[in-house]
Every structure is written in C-alpha cells, then in structure tokens.
Image 1 (cartoon, helix red, strand yellow):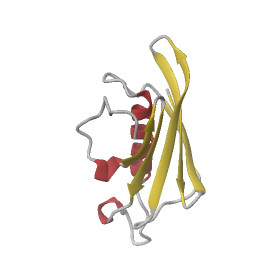
Image 2 (spheres, helix red, strand yellow):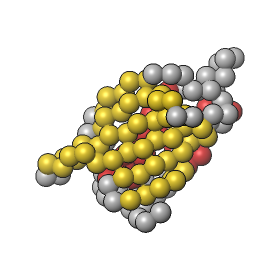
Image 3 (cartoon, helix red, strand yellow):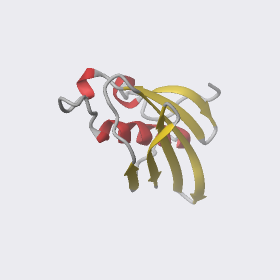
Image 4 (cartoon, one colour):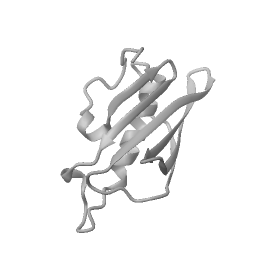
Length: 119
C-alpha cells in the first residue's frame, strides 16, 4: 500500500472491509462475510454490509479527513452469503471544486455483485 489512510480511522474493518491496495484516488478492499452479517436461514447477508464496503472503499479513494457521502446509487446484481469474500474497487472519476465523484464496483470470485456511484 502506498498511501496512509487519512479518513474514517476508527471504522471497524470487520464490518466494512480490510485494505488490499491503496493508491492516490484508488482503493481496493475486501470484506469477509461473517455470521453476524447473516439475516436468514438461507445464509444471505444484508445488503447494507456490501454497501458499507463500497462506501468505505470510496471514502479511502478520496482519502480526505473531512470526506462525507452526499449521494449514492446502488444496483445489487447477486446475493452474498456467509463465508464469501467481497472485493470493492473504488476510484475518483471527477473533481469539481469540493465535489468529487467516485465509483466503486464490488465482486466475489470475479462475478460482479453490485455497481455503486457515490457523490
């Protein structure tokens, strides 16, 4: 990893993911789905955990101490189950003054699970 994390320093990585790669305006994080994320007998995970991973990856791609989420659009493409690992890749795609647009894509075993656009 080439960057030091400047934001969200008190976050629980077991709930929002662990960094795999950090570069200026880019991050890649992994979240391992644990028992406390399961919502039913089918072993499905609440989508909020996948969203949290994507949100955190974007916050770290921006990597400013005062970064906040202004808006988000999420498309979930596949459910996630206990024991699976989810990878989120995030990058800054546009800057306009203080407004920064970023994108995150989540995947598990090279299958896309969700698309996220956060502003």
